[in-house]
Image (cartoon, rainbow, N blue to C red; front, side, top):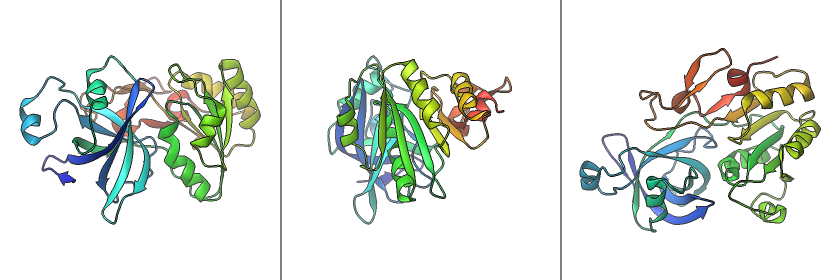
Length: 277
């Protein structure tokens, strides 16, 4: 059951709940048609600690909404899609703990989808992706969109802090056409990038531990310059209100200013956050 409320939120019925490291993944039914533009990198804000309208008006033990990033989207029926949503990984967070305790048939109150994600390819291209095993699901729709356009996908997966995932395990969860490379430490990551950046038509990065300035330097080493439109980066930010009003989500830009990640991101062009040329 999906209900749209006058406050712009949606109630989504939970289909499945699973763990991802210290985070949580929830598959829920949402109205068809929300997956445009491409969901990769976009997010919902979920109300934790309350499900019914009455609870949402009175239960404030977890008052701030938590971000759920869009992962896979599949069709359920003519009117509904099944969205797999990924909560940020913080085992100490009360909101994540509440989400982990949900069961199929319960509902989530969502606001979204919000933000700017990774752009969908408009032509065949060689796309290079850099992520870790925990955030790999966030790129699922981008991977499939690229392959559906006749493009090529190469992933460099950095060993995550919580997940010890082998190469064969990763490959089994990905389309057979996707090439996967593992990087256990920074030296291996840089080596893979030096080899692959020279032929890549585009770069998508979802790896919070990789500073945009360092990434930009590696791109320059391989391609001589950082050009606008080549590289997109999912920035780590506190996504709280979804409108930019609270300013909790601000991230630095290359010009020395700040920008609101919840509305202008959380995916940014590398030139905007690290500078070009």
